[in-house]
Amino acid sequence: MKETFEIIYTVLTGSASAEEKERFEGLMEEEENRQLFNQIQKIWEESKAVRSYKKYDARRSFQELTRKIQEKKRRRKQQLWIGFSGVAAGLALMLGISNFLGISEGNQNPGNVIFATQLGNRSVIYLPDSSRVWLNSSSSLQYSGDFNKKNRTVRLKGEGYFEVAHSKKPFVVNVGPFNIKVYGTHFNVSAYQNDLFIKTCLAKGKISIQRTGYDEYMVKPGELITYDKADASFSKKNVDPDEYSGWRKNLMYMHNESLENLSRKLERRYNVKISFEPEKLGEEVHYTGTFSNENIEEVLDAISIASGLQFSKKDNLYTITRNNQKQHKSFND
Amino acid sequence: MHFDLTDVQLMNKIRVGDFDAFRLLFERYYSPLCNFANSRLQDDFIAEDVVQELFTKVWEERTRIKFTGSIKSYLYTAVKNRSLNRLNAEMLRRKHTGAFRSNQNELISDIDLELEEFRNYLFECIEKLPPRCKIVFEKSRFEDLKQQEIASVMEISVKTVKAQIGKALKLIKTCVELVYPEFSQKN
Image (cartoon, rainbow over all chains, first blue to last red; front, top):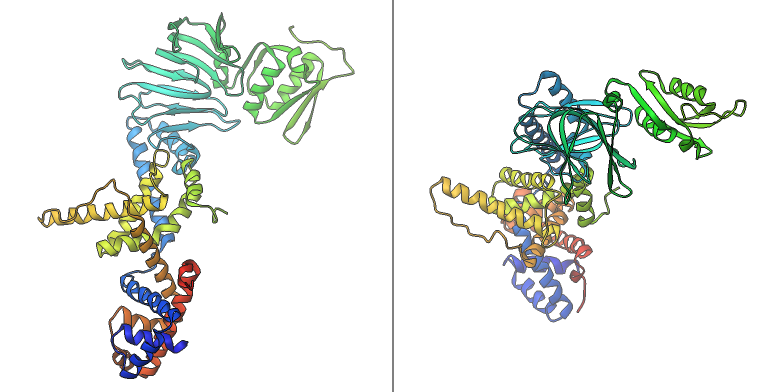
């Protein structure tokens, strides 16, 4: 059997001796050997084609490719940032690293720029048109590579305070169910996915709410427009706009705010979890007031003292309960 | 951990930005595609460049990329077209008219794809041969040396040359059988 391969070799190279040829003919009388010959012949012929084949170093090449992709991305971002101040560029670069290679971008197109803040962090974004956006904790702002070419559209998830630079090109904030069209102004939008409401508050200037199929609504300064996700309805009331943008300066304003809502805000600001026992406590108790730079326990202390509650801590979770030694009372409600 | 994933599963991960999945797809196809490109370009440097370029595009357009056939045939087709484009550009540079024509939208045929895969696997089988066996086989097959020539270059007997090549063919056949069962079927 071992010799069969040798004989086939001599036949394939045309170097078989008379004796080898004779033995080959003998072998070919059997179907099994004919089949073997066909297989070896195929291997023999095709192995000629792999003469130039070699093992290419995929690992080295992949590192090279990674560098190229990175470089491309960096250049693209640089182009977007032309005209930025040094500070803004530094900030953008920092965020760029966290967005390394777009891995965190998920399903987005490569031309898009995304800024995102983590839980407990905030940042200021300078847009290519020199507008500024303060991005609150666990929020993201996204705009396409051609921002400021024809129009200025950004997509907001979470909460942002906008100082929009004057321009003939409309500035539009997309918050999902509707758009906010801006005419040069300062305003705050809170559009967290977990919240039941999207709140838009105009500090100064002119903005409008645009929703497909509805008339454009012009918002007046000091107006708070609340969109209820449950029934897709809008409502408005007059407020102090500072209360809705205080987070920018680390101030937290509360105006008859439920403990439930307040806790959501605290969770985002301090990156903690807060729960109540009993659960209805969250809706029962309401607050009005201001916090600035206190740490989470100071804030919870203040809340507890004001309304006869107490809190306990386990890991990252704070649990607020009724203080049994004191009478139940709610502050300002 | 992504190792056992199919191309489609890897691509689904790549679409949502999984760079690790991208690396695995790259490592799976890089060398075979380079060999495929080089068999057309006769330049391994340009071949690597063509394949790298293709994968850069795959990553950058991962969310939009569409496959009419399998991912494998997409990659081979793209390498074929890109190689032809390079050759045409080179011809143009040398003031020849485009000698190569290809229908860019046409997927590589299954027969061509199968043959290319077979060659790649065959190459791997040859790579796995014991060193001495491999050298004798390559001298015969790649350098077209006759039995006597190999014998004198390597200072071995003709009998040993035959024995080594016979052994090489047997080992290669056994190796090919692992992936191509028809090589062991008895009709």
